[in-house]
Length: 258
Image 1 (cartoon, rainbow, N blue to C red):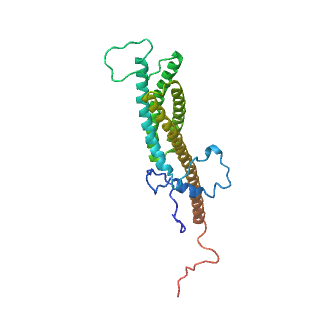
Image 2 (cartoon, rainbow, N blue to C red; image 1 turned 90 degrees about the horizontal axis):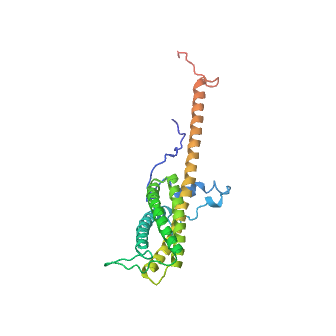
Image 3 (tube, one colour; image 1 turned 180 degrees about the vertical axis):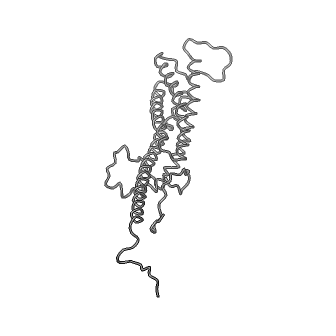
């Protein structure tokens, strides 16, 4: 097969690590390839990356760190939700306990019945969402290492819902509970930080997801062009093979030379 002096680019989809600076599917290569092709194309606002690589932010490494953070926050939510449900059960109105206890349940809300039920609902659904988010966060880390953008989508949905739910739970928790107790103050401060980091982390992963989607489109286009060129070269070669080998201007005499 003749290349006519040009090196055929390889578009084989490899599985590089996000920690590799020489990966074939990186945002740096994406920007260089799409710099001219996207100037005249109007991109919807929801398909534009929220964050871009600069001297302070590395989208690929940042997304992997957010994946690990999502696993941590899922485990933390599971533990605190179980603890909260246990405390609400032990400090139910009208209950009496005897013996020695390691902790005091004075920080647990025991006022209005409907408010208390809402706190239980927040804790219960936080537990369920944390279990789901833990699974999708593990899948996210695997997808980021292999750069499979389709496997990132479940995490984007579940983590967004989880973050919104925990933000609402934080506001409700801070309003109805007495912030005189250390446990309540610590939970409010920690979840305030967690919610801010979660919002920023979701923006990082979403930006990387959009870049991987755009790069996949470029790879598919490259495959299509290579297939078209290959078929064109094949048809050209067949037409040349079927023509007569000599022309009136390039005849070769086969008579013996005397």
